[in-house]
Length: 460
Image (cartoon, rainbow, N blue to C red; front, side):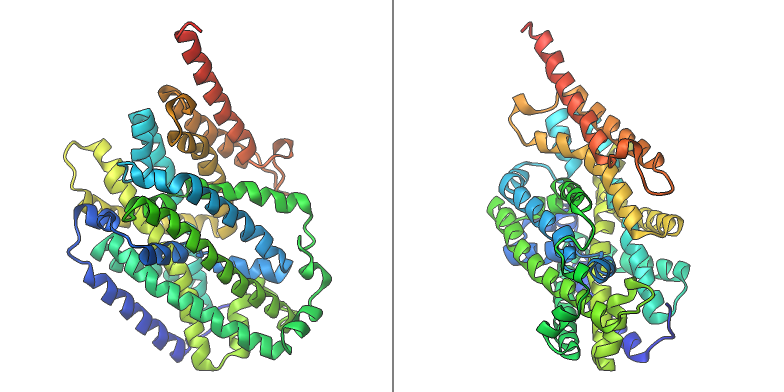
């Protein structure tokens, strides 16, 4: 539902873009470790700001889900991810920071050797290309500016690259702090206005359909339970590792994730109940993806609505920026050194932004579905990385054997990819299993095979 350009929205977005460039300009001389990981000096406030902002790029999808399925949005997209983040904080965050690794492939190389690192680099790069978030930026540009999707995608990537190349990861951190303020301000402004229009919280709750008030949103236990497995993606999430590697100390990494969980709970409250308000105030909305934008137009003053539009763009842009830089850093730090002996990592990382941006636009135009990108790419990469990466932090006796780690990742990735290809037009998978389950089984079998092979070699 594209609309003509609103001058107030255009002005607000212009001021926001100017602020991003001003922050990026501050870090223009960064190089080396400072460029890749902000010198590994992230304080707790900076850690929290960049992690919280990075985790919410799917804001339009949250609006759609809460409009369709009510309070279960919190059960599906909140609770399982809080639990996974809690596990990461308690078991992995400090270990990741204590390592000498600067990336997930570095971690795999230290535990299993170069073959595992090469496979890991391909998997991380696949996950990091920000196609889903570039697509969402394009959709927002269509909603608020009336831009065509191809033009909006190209413009979004051009803006991302323009301010990302200036200061590297330090720019990511600084701009994420601004984006975090804007995203919370946007929904703190919209939810009270929507509640007032609905007659208060009690009236809103009473006006909701029964399914919207049910914990499962009418979806059933099985449909909810699968997300608790999909949330395991958090345990191999490259942006979590990147920020842990950049933390000033191991305790900052652990504490930063724990504090971030609290912020996520608050933001999920704001976004979920804003979606419920849209369900009541806009009961005949033809496209629930537009729940937040249309609610903003309905209940906010035009100036406030322009600021809310900036908040939506900031929520998505912070995630797109973080993933674009992660993909570029993977090319510069992990891929390029495999192709040449002498590599200028900063130069290759900057070139990697162009490559990752082009890949994001291509995938977004090809798939045109944020959910499909999340589900399919997440299933393949999570299943491939989960067990080898988790085991790499464990004592040696519990790790994969070096040769089997790469085999496990390749086998799991191919299994998940095949499962996706065999999906029927009705969305059903072979044996009724989500791709992540057979792929994890292949990875576990590789771990067992490696252990048995080692035991035979030792004559036990």
